[in-house]
Length: 445
Image (tube, rainbow, N blue to C red):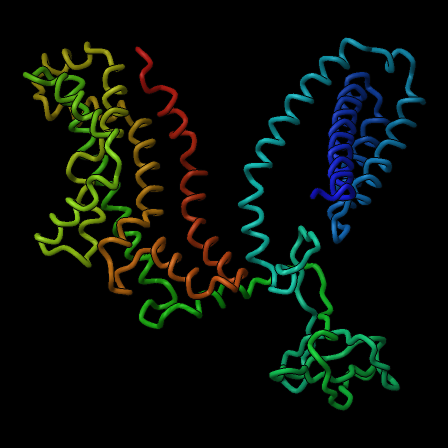
């Protein structure tokens, strides 16, 4: 049975979010209008309001419905005051404001969509920088926190608060130091104003709460690598295996897929179109259909428990989709370039290597990026062919790490972030070529 209070709270959240969007739109429209009408005093004032209000919302921990309504109210008041004291001519320029509102609403929708897609990654990143106490809590905390510590006799001790415990004479108000953890209790010592520690006391873990401040727990990343087996050298072996498989897959795919695509697009030979249809038909075969035959082939060749099955297939055509993508790009190149090269005495191989291949660099970049992402994140291949720990790739090792340390979310998210960073870096720097290759494929030149 649904809880009426929960349903009413959801309605309030929807109203608060809509109000926040309306106020954000009002902000932007007012700032643009003030800048257009040379209201030099009004634009900086509105910009300051637009910056200060979201900052206060982010600083409020934990984030709640009340803070969102308070932020909306705090933004409405100065905006309304600035609107009332504006000049009548500036206040009723409806046509310009209507166009600004339309553009602002469109951009807010696009920004909202991008934020929605960024939420999983932001959650992954912030969780990797939190400790377990902040992860397993019912409170919504956006920014990570870290426990305040003090050094005493060469040791780092966490500062805590102890519920229902009277303070010692000369003690800092409510500040205790956690000396050590026992099986069913915690040993704490009061922190004195002189910087010394008082006598030890034993309390239950439920009465101890860490004193925290905003800050990232960067120690999660090296600590996560400490749990890896010694023979992997803190994951360097996994990284080397993944780099070998990824680089060889990219080289093999680019080389063989480009040659096959050039043959289908520019050369004339019997059965070309029929064989191309058969090639496209292989894209409809599920991977499970060819999984066992491929395994039996590699097993008979003696390559099981090696990295060869993970990259050798890239040198056998590069994949039907990659061939199709490059073929469509080759078909957009004018035939006059080939004819001019033939007049100069070039053969098919030289035409392919020196004339055609440089012209399809955007498509090659697209294929390289997709191959990199597929090889880097390949999990099924290592699962089938690899059994030795020293021959595992990052994706397979991450799955095993999750199985063993699934309860330690901070370490698991830190390891996942380390695996994901190279993919993000490659796509960030190569996205221009990726988009260009996709958009130009199939366009007749």
